[in-house]
Image (cartoon, rainbow, N blue to C red; front, side, top):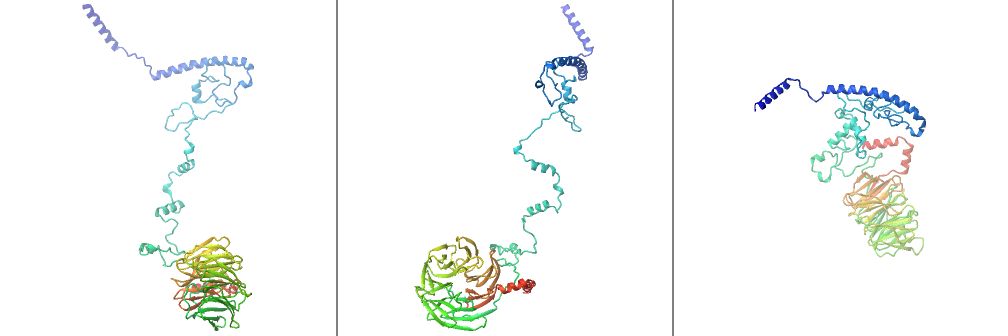
Amino acid sequence: NEYKSYLRIIGIMSTDKRINEPIISNIVPRWKRKEQEKARQGKTNTSNNASFSSQSNMSSTFGESLNASDVPNNRKTPCKPSLTLNMPYKTTCIDGTPKKKLNSSLRCQNKVGTPKKLVRPREGKRSTHTTPSCDRFIPTRSGTDFDSSGFEILNTGDDNNDSPTTRRYKDGMKINLSMGNQKILNMKAKAPLPAVNVLNSRTKVLFASSNGQVNRKATSRCIPQTAWRVLDAPDVNNDYYLNLLDWSMKNYICVALGQSVFLLHVDTGDILELTEHHSQVASVKWSPILPEVLAIGDHDNNVSLWNIEKEMEVRVMSGHTDRVSSLAWNEYILSSGSRSGQIFHHDVRVSNHHVATLAGHDLEVCGLQYNKDGNYLASGGNDNIAIIWDKRETVPVHTLIEHSGAVKALAWSPFSTNLLASGGGTQDRQICFWNALNGVLHNSIDTGSQVSSLLWSKNSKELVSGHGYSQHLLTVWKYPSMTRLAELAGHEDRVLQMAMSPDGSTVISLGADESLRLWKIFESESSRKKKKADPLAMSKSKLTLSCR
């Protein structure tokens, strides 16, 4: 026991002695490890130089036996040797520099290859890469918009530098103010009309300058708003389906009043009562090639021919089963439409005058009109349809069913022989334009009132329409835009029919208010020639328009 105690004391004393000794650790400090690595590298460089000399001798010995194809050419990495041999040192370059050191400095360059660029670290930051790398992150190009991205990068920070004069600033203001293409103030164009359902809204009506129904286009000529002459027409038959007015090539106006037919010579002002029928007159029509011949259709189902120079009836043609309410001439052929729905062709040169019958309407034929060439005949009826006929056929070429009212107003264009204008009755109120070749509807416009008559201008692309219920006026249109040039009011009741003077300047209208009104609407050919010869004529016309 005493021996064991002695040994324990000796052990404690030896432990206290080791505590006072310096601490010995197996961990080598970093600064010491770096010194050891530098020392080892110095020894390695010395051995590499020796091995390089031996490699050179070996390459000179064995280089002659190698083929040109065995030597790689144009190597882009200069760190690798030009010949691959079984050398004991594979981690060194030709000049003996270690491969790791070579990659970090790229000081070993080959004349054949191109050295790689160094990746320079940013200022203020220490690079964590010891070797340059050409690899980079390439995103999916199919889902990347490089143009937009580049634009946003170049324009970053310019949002606050927009000037009020730039287009970008103006477009942004338009979008934010919700103005679109409209202007807040516009002194040139008229203000927009208010909607029909917001007439009582003050916020909407403030933008309206007038309560008109259409936009009127300013013209370079003056269209008088009043008739230059008014005549009485007592006892006129107030029937929409009759044709009681016409104007001859010799400047005679014919009007049927009850059972009487009156003639007015416009040049002299003389009025002549041609005849007094035993029945009501339903239609009158002057012959275009025989100016002294007048055709009259009556309620006795007959058509009579009169010579106004001799003031006598020369022929009576019968055959219809009801009143003859429409007439149309094509040289020596007279076409007559009846309330039965039939159309007869009469050749006035032969005794057997009835040469053809056209059956296409179910109700009364109230409109007949030949085109300028005489190849086509247009007919309108109370069955709400218009039909185009070939003069050599008895079968309709085209049946026009666009109208929803009686079709009385028909007019062929003097500029295009295949263009037909037709007007509908109270339930329709439309003016339609048709192509006679294929029966296609070119255009249509709602006039807002019954269309009783249509006339084309002979010298310009304009037309005038006569209206019944409920406006009772004449409207001048510009074709093909169908802009209203003028609205001529004066009749106190609906307009029954219109006719045009031989020179195409004056229009006469017959109203149910028992009046005849003559209007100076269009320009005659002589006045157009004078304006072309006189350069001041146009300015005078504009001055007259402004003074009115």
